[in-house]
Every structure is written in structure tokens, then in C-alpha cells.
Image (cartoon, rainbow, N blue to C red):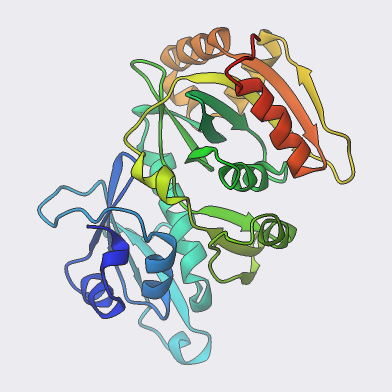
Length: 306
């Protein structure tokens, strides 16, 4: 059963009771908390995600709740709780959705060390996986959002999970967090995109979440081998330029974009080395989404010889 199969009253009942067991990529999240319009937003953004049965073992037990103090009447807040712990300061109640998404990111980043975790978008087309590692502000999420509305499969926008045994990418196609000008850019670029409400005045400016395509969610059990590592960089008005990187430089940049490279030690070194040796590596500067997509389409075209 998918989340969309649950009507809002049913969803509210689960969130306020036994919890919603949500399967996202290789993880099962037990989610509790009936906060404002959060049930409606979960139903919108996670519509195609499967609901796991209650007898399964969840990887994360997450709840959102209001603190029991006088601020409830003054400036309402919301708390993020994981397995009985509260790792963050409370957020304004109206930012419950961004808090949930960031909190889930935190849970994965702090616990999923059986994967190499890259801060990267990952997409796939024609069986070729492209890793898009990037620092915040590089245009990674905007490029990912544009690609998945031009026929590419989304494997991840925030966490690139790499299987430590075989080096394949494990899909984690969660909603894409668009920020500030990117929201309007994607609304214009892909009018059929499903984007949730905008949340202004977060720590990262205005944030809105893009629902992943149905096909990407339905294929989230299908791993893929990475073929290309491309470091994107958006520059307003810049020409689209694809520049080859040396393996040594690409190794340094990819390792620097891993959340847990140092935690994994020699195994992380070996895995990143293996990935770089098996991939072509580029830097992509772009100021136009259509031109950038055309460059990437050409790289994965069946006739492309490398």
C-alpha cells in the first residue's frame, strides 16, 4: 500500500497512534506526530512511497511534538525526537516540515555508516549512474530537479549511498529540498512538478520540497553502478562548459564530499579509489538548465564512446 492510499483522517490516526511506517530507500521510518498540516504535506510529498506493515522493525523511530511549556501560547514550537532523544533545539511550529526532512537527514548521517555516504545528487539514465557531488549553493538540487523532469531517474538528492561490498549506488529518492530562487526556477522549468508549500525564514532561506517522480520511487530497490562523477557549479549567465578532471583531483573532491569518509578509514579509501578508477570525471559549469541537461544526455547516450 502507498501513502496516497491513506485518506487524511486515516493518516492522522496512524501518526497520532501506532505511527506511520514509511519505507524510503533501504530504511524504514516509524513516524509519529500530528502537527498542523503535516499529515496533508506527508501525503502530498510521499504519495508514492510504500507503507510498511506495523510488525516490521523500523530503523528510526521519529516523532514530532509540541513542547509542554508556556511558549505554546506565545510562540508555538515543535520538537524533533528520535528514539526518545531530542537532538535539536525546538523549531517554530510552522517549520515542522523542514524540521522533519532535516531531522531525517541527521538520522541517516549519524547512523548509516554501513554505507559510504556522499553529499551528492545521483541520477540515472540508460543504465548509467551519474554522481553529482557538490557543496551547498552549487545548484546541485536544482539540476537534479530539472533532470528528473527530463526523463532521468532520481536515486538521491542529498545522500548518495554507496554499498561498501560492491560499490553500487543504493537509491534513496526522497523529496528534493529546493531553496530560494530555485523554487521559482523549477516551477517555470517543470510546470507539472509537484512542489509542497514554501517555508520562508528558515536557516537556509525559503525552502520548498519537490515530490520525487513515481517511477523513481517504484524503482528504489534497483541499484546502479556509477559511470560518471560530475561536479556541478551554477553561475548566473555562464556558458555551459564540461571540463575533464584528473582522477587524482576528482578523488580529493569526492572524498571531501563524503559525510563519513574518515569514519570508514581504509575501507572508505579503497571504495572511493575504486569508484574514481571506474568513472569518467568532469566539472560542469552551467547557467542554463537545458544546455546542462543536453551535455549530460550526450554523455550517457548509447552511441557515446567516452
